[in-house]
Length: 62
Image 1 (cartoon, rainbow, N blue to C red):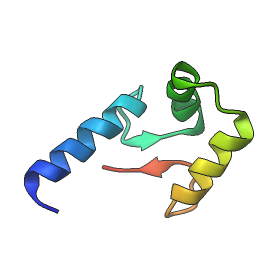
Image 2: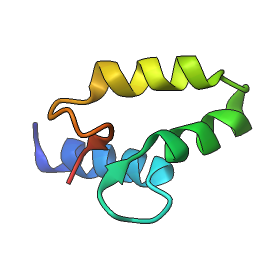
Image 3: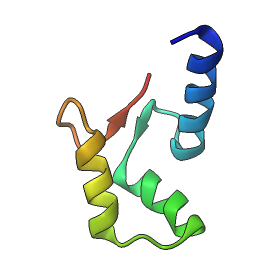
Image 4: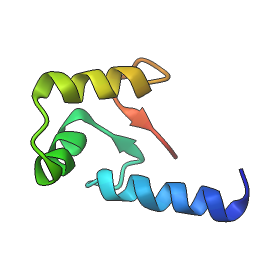
């Protein structure tokens, strides 16, 4: 991934990472998704589970 693409990816994750800790938690994802179209808690949990590479219950990006 080139530098510009990496920066764009980081900016996209910053939209979801409300507390700036480098993680997208289920609460962070639910907050954004509620503003976009009201996903159920189960749908958010499924999205996190599919993207959680280290099993900590969050999407890590930093």
